[in-house]
Length: 311
Image (cartoon, rainbow, N blue to C red):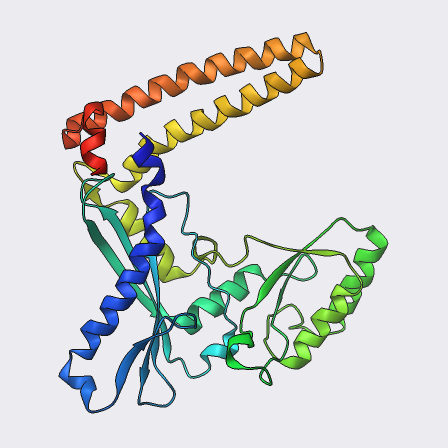
């Protein structure tokens, strides 16, 4: 049960290993030897670049564990970074060969233009005055490690109707395409003027790959989740483990609320939260029994195998 909850933590490690292997694999190809050499960048964007051609081609590699909550990898680089369309995003979906243990198994791969991902992201998020996408300030004068290429998203906070009306009037003054996102300095200046009128907060969930709404990535996600692995689709495996996690979270929340109510001397509320905790504990036990049953049926794994799986 614990392995099912933490195995996704291996994804960043696997992604780094794939970066190393990609460079070794490509440098072994005769086609590239006369032209230059592939090199891994760490830190740097993209992960893998080819030295010898201008503009420099490269791959940004993203590993996705489909039983995690979502594709948490982010893609924040500005559209300006992809003017030559020479960088591609390579996303690899993977699982352990036995779902919760075993060697990594690559399920499927999608390769898409980085430029198309950045454009889809900006078109999806940018919606002034409710949501603004802002380019980084000009940092070309800084040393390479201090230069910034990442965009950020800002969500509008509560405002008065009067302030909102003024903001909408300003946007209308930008012309018929005033709400269409552009990374140009002129348009960014207009957005910063708007930010001076209204309160915004930095969106910490901005640009997660699962929320960009890119057609090819969405098709890839659907294809992977419908794949059959050990007699069940990945979507069914996901639902199996998610039920246990959901009820475990509900149990922890109810216990915390009960303890707080007891500290405050609210016996009635403590009793209600205790009932919620008992109900959640029952549902959690049922979900765990279901997980154990499926693991035994599909993979031959029993609870007593835990020590062996961890070796």
